[in-house]
Length: 250
Image: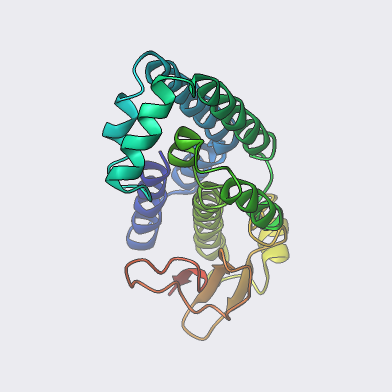
């Protein structure tokens, strides 16, 4: 879902940057982007994942050997898995119910906090992830199925930042077409267009903006929650928690 929305926002940026759109066309694109609300879908996705995983628990209770098939690439060695599943098939059946209750408790907490922005969720993440790490190793299903806590929220807010930044990028071009220059500030932009600029989800405040000799620099502080002065996120694989999310206009 996030990838599709990101592609749409990026496409809108490219169209506006390369083409001279009419004011009506720009307003129409902005209106479509403004209607995108990722919060309900994100929470529904977590609830749907929980529903699916509860089915996994039911299947494991009916045939504990199924779990061996989904745990091949986990922290458990072959002999450990054989011992665990043999135990669960006999006197350890109550363990399966305790495992499921632990999973439900953790996912309930995750869903409860899912509407928080990443900047607030990050403070909760260490506490939550410590709870996940403290889950007894015998609760195999919970340790396998429990998703990360902060990472999905970070990806959601990254997408929101890209949507909001694209909307401001469009508005800056609208302003320039009307006035022949980019505005001195985002407040001037908002008053000039009689338009409310969306906020940066990572800071909770306005996007960073600077008019330059060649155009403008606009950016979100990104998921490291630091103002890096408009230095973009690295493109190196596996490194996604540094740098800003940047738009430039000429």
